[in-house]
Image 1: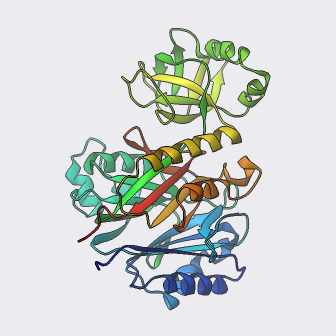
Image 2: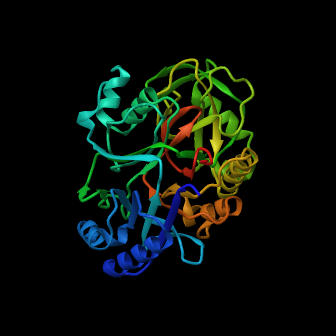
Image 3: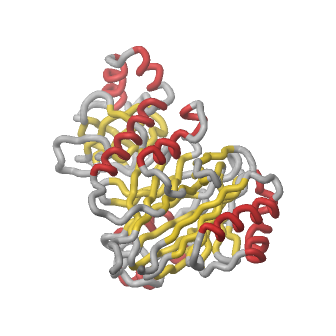
Length: 406
């Protein structure tokens, strides 16, 4: 029997960091029958004052060739009984160990100053990361909460590594201005980007749940300046928006006061647009005098957009739709062995009014695989063929072998 991928996660809520580390290492190591090639560790902001102690304490009990991780406003993991937990605002430590035969595992740390220009050739990006473009690697990235280079790096990876998949998230702390940490082998960083590239007999399949529903009709941007929409269908955007809101139900009008977003069509030619065809972006502000709207992304004339609303019900329906779609496509594939979940700090119990919602829904469709992750300041995942930084999103990465080995 060929050596197979093994994936284990352990979760501890012990308030003592030493005790929590002892728990997760013992549980995760005992779940594997072969040495781990990769470790992923996520620690809650309740341990902020002890971030510097994490790696030395882990090193006393665990040896793994590549280890990455970060802090989170909440931590996601799987209990010894196989239940998922999303632990927010309380001590928690999640450790994932993976045995990855026939897979090259390469870790890296990048600071924004090292990034090539966006018009640089693919080889410059390949030299930076240090792995070839074939076979297409699978990337897991963790960045500082305000890392200026993350968007450029995502574009560079998409350009230099066609066919690759990239997922991840921005480290988060406890509340505004909370301290964050990135962990890479034996070093702790406050900023930059750490990651791991996995090449060989492995694939990461993605589900990116943005949790919004469209309202009104599709519009075309006829005039814009960077991230400011100046005209929609040759009308002032605020006039278009006011007409739209006037025709909403009373419930949706109330929702639009605090949960209104813009969905940018990712395909410039597709006529019949559905869930997953839009990139959701926040509305940053309006200019009543000019009738303009500023959004959290650059926009150009000719792009199409549709206004969207978000609420708990819509978010749940969106994730369930994507999970159902994913399951229908799984024909004669090797079984999934594990999953990673990168969820916005704006989701979780604050959105659903109950704990563990996204992870439990995920486990309803993909049973009996360990899931781990954290609550992020921004989530990384592909939409419409491009890898992007999101907000208010849950990004899942599902790990499996490419094919059954003879």
